[in-house]
Figure (cartoon, rainbow, N blue to C red):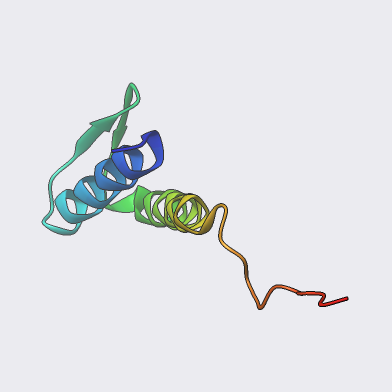
Length: 68
């Protein structure tokens, strides 16, 4: 696992816990339902990073081949 996938897992766990009515200590901060938007924003950022890592090195389209 990469740092991005580890962080994504932590944010998902925090989001689930808060939705279940629990408070979570995350990075030295105690988070509750009032912090749900921040947790979701963090999760979305790490989802983007995981996606970027998974597509790293892949071409987004066809390659150009020259036959001279």
